Image (cartoon, rainbow, N blue to C red; front, side):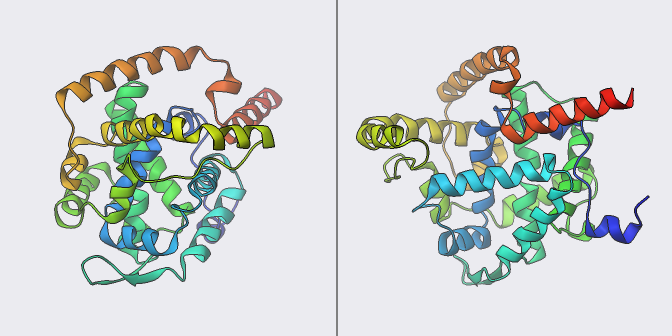
Length: 292
């Protein structure tokens, strides 16, 4: 049995079979992530840090791949999860500057670092209603407990995050009311007219084809990115940022998500789950069989 000190240094990931275990490895999570990222950078300090220190404009595909890999490790990485958390803290130690309101910021300031993590919970909770199914009150509580556990992996102290779901919502609404705005990074993430380079990974023939077809492929892709980013963002967050959303768009989103809800569950596992999730699920099944 590990000691409390060892558990503090190497916090365990959320449990297999939990709510987060099911949500974050499902391919539908890819549709949820843009809303969470946009809500993160709507905080002036976080937005300034990304604006000044990130390569999201010059290498969006590489940054996205690295971010997704990191997120999957938090949940499915086993012993590697805690090391990934330490790596992220090392990476953010030098990120500091002045935000859009003229205030000094540091990426690891408790309020800033906690907000980046906190945004995942309301986005998962809201988007699951559209893409999976509404969570029951018990599932929402379990999801929040598991999200707190992920926060410990990232090095967030319990004192810096609301420890119950009842405490979370007043904290969340306060940040929306006092901090959130349409930062330059938000504007980039929901824009449909700003250039994005084509993906530069995969076989040479694929890269060349994408480069050739990118002027045709990118405009509808940019419109879809904006649509799911704004549509799957919680309405109160959308309003705080100042993002417009119409009744017609809401109806279109519900139709689209209805198709996704019906199609994804019948896909084979190799198509339904992201790679880290597939491997973790297979390893868990083997462990369960070995213990029988």
